[in-house]
Amino acid sequence: MRADIRAPRQWIAVRSMVGPSDNPAEEGTYLISRFLMDTGFDLRKHGGVDVFLRDCPTRSVLELIAGKWTMLVLVALEDRRPMRFAELRRRLDGVTSKVLTQTLRALERDGLMTRTVYPTVPPCVEYQLTKMGQEVGGLLQSITDWSQANIAAVQAAREEFDERATRQPPGAGTSSATQG
Image 1 (tube, rainbow, N blue to C red):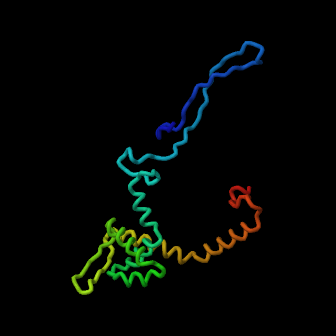
Image 2: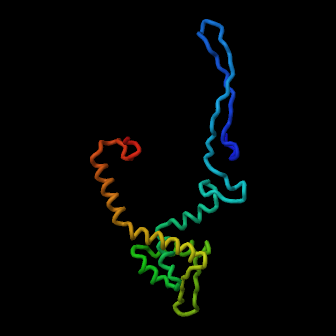
Image 3: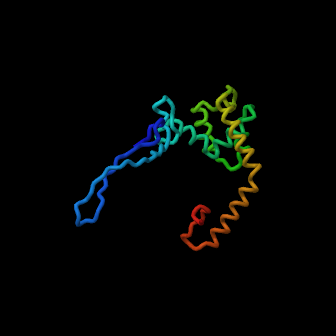
């Protein structure tokens, strides 16, 4: 049962039977106070969305943005100058033409990037972020900056974890929460 936000406490009546099993029992009623735990606020009732629900439409946007190549494309285009396909491919070391094409199409479909084709032989195609793309690109640039600033600490944490994991017997928990 969900708690009403304004009334997190609920009183419930409990019937008890007191006395040994061979004697007639005395019955009584007493009240127990309990707090109901609200596990979240459903924004759909108020015209919003809840990204934690599986059918939330914003999940598809988050899935696109969270993709490795999408993030890198958005950061590469974040300087607001148009780039050609070959230039993007050179900038994103390791991406295949197929994956880059799929990523660019998905970004264009969601309105984060524009694709401009110039009528030349061979055709010249440029990619540039839209206003929405620039907004999310700026956010991802901040994540990139944080990643670069903290890579040494992350690598040290990984090495420490791996070292601990090799010293523990199989099946033992590695979480500090379970150790103590």
